[in-house]
Length: 173
Image (cartoon, rainbow, N blue to C red):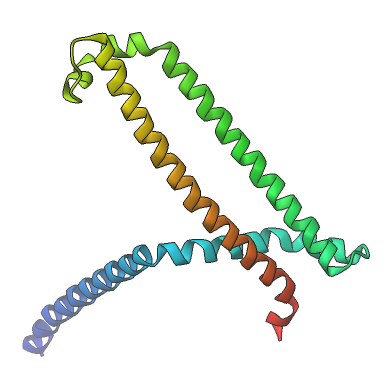
């Protein structure tokens, strides 16, 4: 009996190791697929989130006697207003940050002057200003392109939320 019990623990350990490695592989593949499909999954999840956030207000407005179209418009207006407030707060924060950077530019250059040399800064002040301007324009183009993508995904999310809110009673059946 003792010889039989000694052979089982190594096989159980190898099974546990194999199971662990398989779980890690499956998790890695799942994360890869999620990352790969994120341009599709993101707006869909945003639509579900907006529908879940707007559903209580939608039901409340319908119980108050509003027609479905008006209730849906009111909910979407509330969600757009809340999104606009969040965007306004983010814009104010970015403005405050850029103003602070502009005010402390000289201090930043004195402390981190080596960064200018690494980025190809030339000793003359005019060329430094030109390189900073080129860098800022590149950053601005990148930000505008990212915002266009976010706006497109948000529109898709809102359309999906509208469809989900209108068809919500049918999901139960």
